[in-house]
Image (cartoon, rainbow, N blue to C red; front, side):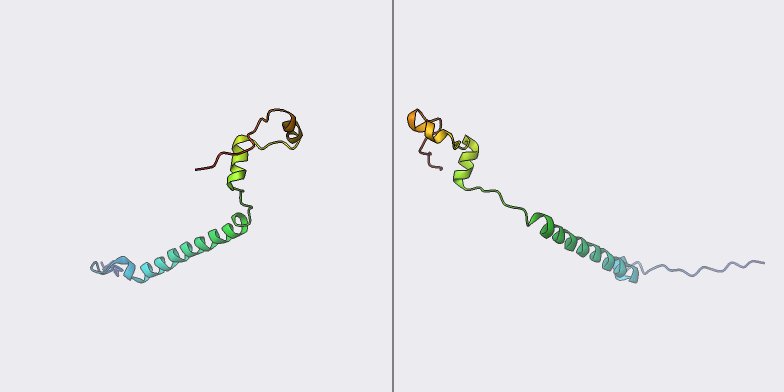
Length: 94
């Protein structure tokens, strides 16, 4: 009753790589598009959220004051009559 009919084969030629087939080229296009989209989105996020942030003041005087403590504004008149808590001349940085 039923005859055995060999099914149509969709096998590819084993000598050619999969990326050379239509499915492989489509996969490569979609994968490349996703990578390009992610790079664009990361650049947009950088320019919207990170680039406008203010930069820290890293001048040598500001770093010295941050490490050793900035002199108070009220300490200046008291320093004239007595010993100073902070040296008036800073050591040179190497």
